[in-house]
Image (cartoon, rainbow over the protein chains, first blue to last red):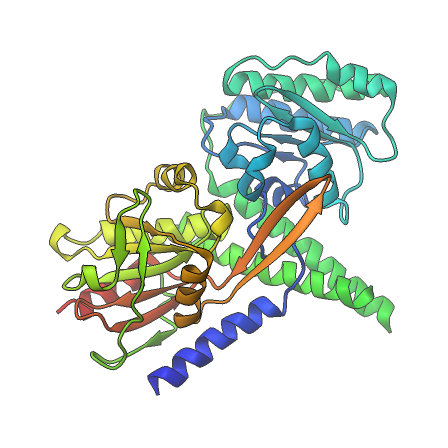
Length: 208
Length: 206
């Protein structure tokens, strides 16, 4: 009975996995490609990102998107943040292209990647010389504050190069230092559920 | 095309639901109502043996740990979604037990491309798994044999994007409890809670 039960249990798990062959859905890939399906910003794990800098970057990105310049941002602090694509550590330009391909089924707009050694920009079909010049002017200073400042500056410069002048958001008075690791995960998951539900709803509706 | 998109949506839904449950379990610090998926009576099923190496190159096997409970889990060292959560739950369960009653955690790698010692040690540090955690790595054939004997499905998708080849791993996210006599006593399929693992360890330790 035990053997049968074990086989049944593991079979169910295997079937569950087998029923979802879509790459990236259940696979252990790079985490930024999961987050950026539903979020506009991916922040590094365990990098002691302050709430103030996180909120400032998120606000600038949000404002840029609302004002007409679409952008998503991945801030990569260490090799660890790259998951299964550690080969692309310190290759922000290549990783930007890679990441853009990873999330292209949901988002095809401009993408900014910031690593300690520089920034990468990929804008499939909409890249402009002004955009690349804007990114080339961004410098990354050491440490997490340097990464966050470069990301924020990069978005502001890119938006400005496309005629969108974003205003830095007012920081919440109650902003605390540090952040929960679980909150962005939960937000990402909830977002993914929403995307999947919308997709399923759409298929059902239009499949009739 | 439409079929692929539907499967994709279904896959994301499954992943999202599992992830949400896992995140909520972990975030809430829940003791975990989710118990083992399967249990076995004492002496009913001997745990398959294996001989692999840990993160320091030392031998690691079921036989060498006889006399102590073992949590045998299957982890991708490069995973950044469920594996770290499962590792923390297992480590939390072990930490909550008296030192003399703590099981060893043997984490068998499911990603031979991610088995570099630096990755293993970094995971231990980032995941805060404690001294009872040991990785178990080996050659492709040895690892595949262990996965098969523990009925762990591991699928590898190799892709080249932007000129970069990556190996993405999809695997059964599960852990076995092996009692001190070397017999399997419970199978936990993710998501599960630390409380359930702790209870199972306590009830099978003697």
